[in-house]
Length: 332
Image 1 (cartoon, rainbow, N blue to C red):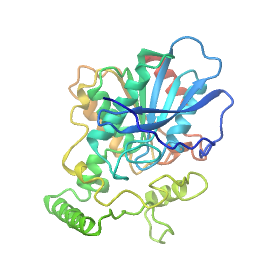
Image 2: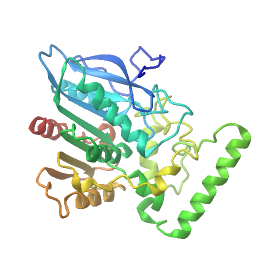
Image 3: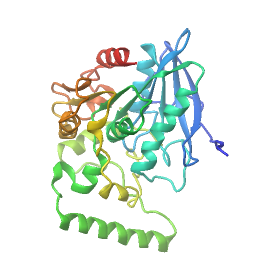
Image 4: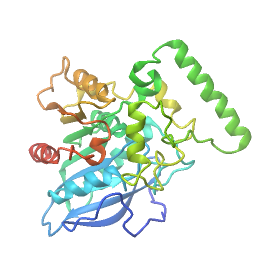
């Protein structure tokens, strides 16, 4: 029997962004096909009537719904969409044991379960459902769009391909059999240590304090996750990070294998100066190359924006919400 677990959900407003007076907010839960109960914030446009187009939002990888995904969800609700921002399995207020694990399969399923929930909601038009994935969840969103034919439109914002970065390192700098072998050997050794200790060692979140020689993208993450701008006590990236063994399965399970078979609309958005921009450029090329469904695919590069500018807008108001609204209105 499919039954949701009882989760303890925070009722006070504890987001990293102000509460809107143009959208109603409530807590909801739903279940995925592995029996894990997921927690979400639902945002409904004030005075909405009839069946609404709906959007499920998640990300970044290691963040919680009180951070970027909630901002995206609330803003899109202000623009007429019923939205949910959810915590993935094993993180935030969602269920799943052990904590702080990630899975390309289960995390794709989390998005599909969100579509289940929205499809059956009495205020939602089930034929007008889209998804937004941010950072690592941008890759998950594309993977979900390749699998779930109910999704009519997908946005991947400041996207990371988590399988690629785990298998090849940043900028593909560790893309060799030897480098992958060393990585796998270290993780497997940690598995035994965890078994001996009866607990999982955490990898550590964003480094703090910053060393003087930290690369720019590390400083970029620190500026968001470790400051008042984006810190949240339930965010993995703001605190002790994933379990060291938590992302092991990403190494040999590429998630974007069938992206060029996606028939529904996809919009990739990335900052011009983001260290991660190559993920979206390559994903778009793969998605459209020799594809019969390229006409509704788009890559939008935001001038001068860095990776975290698309988390909360940064100081540039970099998130192109007008474009997101136009995209979803066209395809939902």
